[in-house]
Length: 220
Image (cartoon, rainbow, N blue to C red; front, top):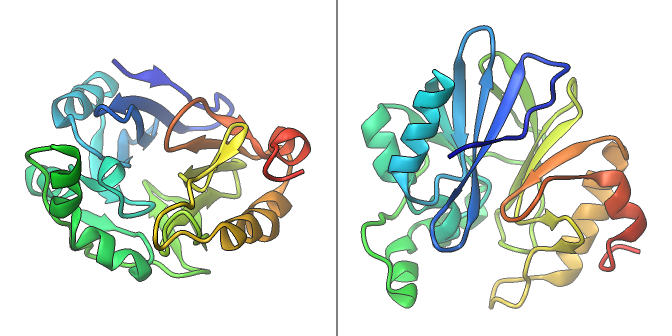
């Protein structure tokens, strides 16, 4: 069942669908007027994602990835085939992860996932549109080499993946993790966008940059 997480002042709507054993926040983003949108973080449980699409009454035009971990991208290739749409993102530095999703699955005893080859990679300064709404791309490595954040400046809203959580940050204890790079990306790219920016992260509740800047123990 979807959990509404929309900003009511705009026609851009968002709903969160927790998926997989990792309880990852797969998100649907759509324009309320056109009912066109995107799926972000399709980690798995495609039946739940498709149910959420049906409940919202929307047509998906693309799939967006923030990074290449299995819980965020494990269902992307199958969903692309079902919907006949393109996968866009993340940064090409995560190609090694997307090329090895099936190996990641073996480590966790997960079946039914596929490696992913995006139709389009993103870099710092790029933009992407969802139903006419523009999102700026910020390359924020550290949790993974190719993590990206999607920011809608007009509506002060960001999809941050596992870069930042409410009261925490993404893990950096992987062989390719980089704690200093992650903290730098958050402090130099995200927080300057403004305290009022709301965000949806890959796990856990949504938040705002202001409280994180003031109270997040990894940032103060």
